[in-house]
Image (cartoon, rainbow, N blue to C red; front, side, top):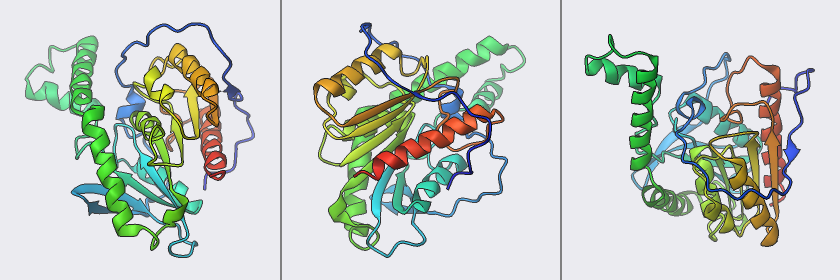
Length: 298
């Protein structure tokens, strides 16, 4: 469970309104919040375990006080830091503490997104560190991230998710969770796109997504299951025009949906982590509460 909200209020998230601009979205690179495990100034310890199903490593977090076989299943899809990031594991645990049986697969087969440490190692191995200045180093990082994204396309990622869902059903259905209630999906950053793609199928009954990366208008237009989105104001990784057109598509298609825009927070804010700014901490709790309220409806 998240800590109690701080006394200093953060700017309230806004419900998105209609917009006219329908320009094509740029293709930005991932932000640092997607590729670095935000340091934790906490003694909180991840309580789940990693199992292997269908040759995929999966972090499993179980509710402590729910009778076996009665919990709801939550499929949690991470950002680029993957299942080894402590922040993602604790985020999964927080959903489990709310009574959900959580499975969080390794979408990247151990190949998490390049971060600052990886860039430094790359430049050292190339014997260029002494000559590379800040901008050049950022260029190396950008190139490495672009190459990483090229390895983890929808064509490579969706089959992993689909086989994990099959394996989870075969292994845990009606023993660890109630299969009759269907699957709920949660996605952050990289994973948010795939929640929307799942919501275009019958694999899930509802989905929630935070600060999505590389989401297209087509991803949202295909949605046919209820969804809620936690978005960042002026987020270059999920541009306003894509967000606004997506909201219009959901309305036009009569999809049960909710879209909240959080001002003054960084991309990646909704994943559990340590921030010094009180308004970011508050927004993080608000997004978690937004997700819980929506999931509890289904």
